[in-house]
Image (cartoon, rainbow, N blue to C red; front, side):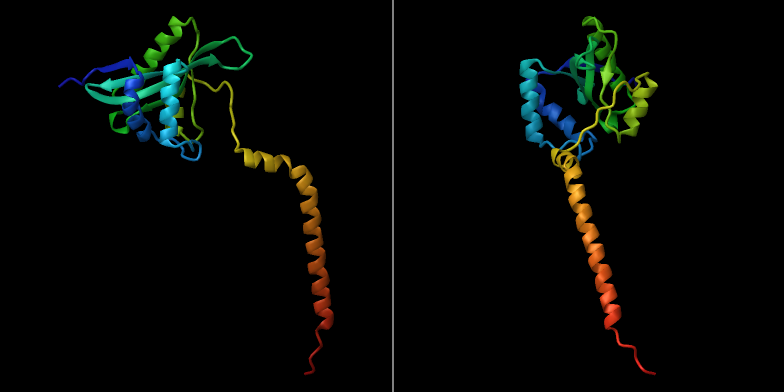
Length: 194
């Protein structure tokens, strides 16, 4: 029996429920994606309505099988090389190795060509080894590395120059106090007669 063909079409706001089910099945690192599902849903609806993103929705027969969320922005803010960037690409785990990912990427290539771009970029989470290997086999190579930090951590690290001096002084005073207490304790100890 032949496998059903993969069909890819543009998703609209009517497809948000299906997209959110697919999103929920994605294996994103929860530490990096702190947004609630409802927040993601509202952002997705707004972005689709404003045309800020394009979502390609793949079906394997009648079953939703995966999606690719695509933006078109320059790779670097001051660069002139704009083209589609696949921000999320997800295929339902039980439907992998059936051509769904390739069909989504083929559609992204068509988008790039229609926009006059000469490349397609993709976002890869650092811990997603399987996806990293997949896109590397297709020829994707690192171009830039974007790193993120919670504001509280950055604020604390930036103030370490001032806090480090203060904390170094506190540590030194504690060590000095411990040393003095230890010496005082030794001096107070009375030798026992045997």
